[in-house]
Length: 205
Length: 161
Image (cartoon, rainbow over all chains, first blue to last red; front, side, top):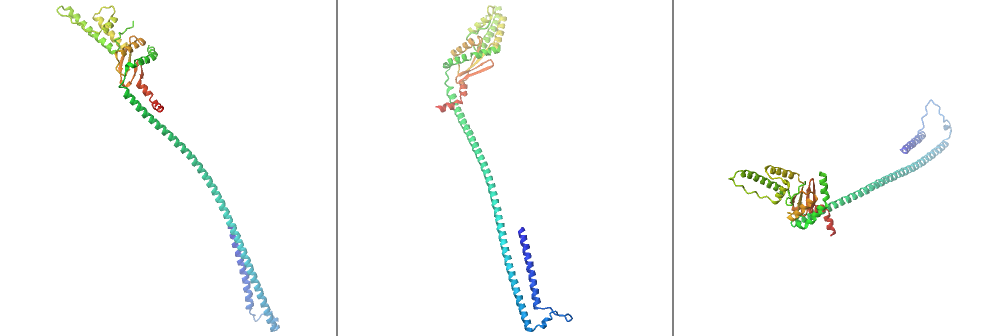
């Protein structure tokens, strides 16, 4: 922004000097080709012109014309050269400015890219970490659920099996009971728990 | 003196029948006493009373002579005994035969109380073993309970087969 303002001011100053030089050149040309009229009352200074012979006058005129032309040509050439130099400098400056601006922009762009890249890497690593954690949690949860489901199924199968066996035994055995063969067992059981009955009697008394 | 119940009076039902027999006898005795005062009326035959009832009555009355008052007292005594005698309920898987009944009753009278009444019942779903109820406790020594208690082990056993 500062460079642009400086460049604008520099161009404005150049244009101002060019205007001044153009004005001076126009005034010189006007004074040469249209000399000012002499008033009747006023004394004419170049008295000597009337004294000078016509050929010398002519010669002087031609010499001064040639000198003026030389000066003009020299000024024009110098002006042209100055203009060219200025243009070159401006071009150089513009190039340098453009280069600086572009390199700055590129550097900033690179820095932004690096920053974004780093940020993205951090984000991606965070996401990866979260994904890993979530994945391991999910795996553990699924494994736990599967294990629970497995246990539940095994338990259900065991229960069904136990029910089936139990029903089978109850259905089969209750029609074939031989108490005679059980008598020793019954007495043995009673003997085994004789103390319990004695305790009952003691507790009651 | 502790009452010694005869072997065939082993259940509460047996004891109830003793009371009924005694009441029947007391009733006959009262009627017969009146009839004896009238020479024209012939006395009835005494009612048939089981041997065990006679034994028990003898044990309770002792040397005393039987009359209306002593019979009433005897009936009251028997009713009071019915309420106070110890009882045990044994549920078996099938209807017990007389030998099994005898074995169980003798065991109970030898080991628990000599005057205990044994109430024998049956329930075929027990499969075997017995369920004993004595005073405030129920002891389940049936095969059914054993099977149900071991039901968790069935799959384990089957897996080993």
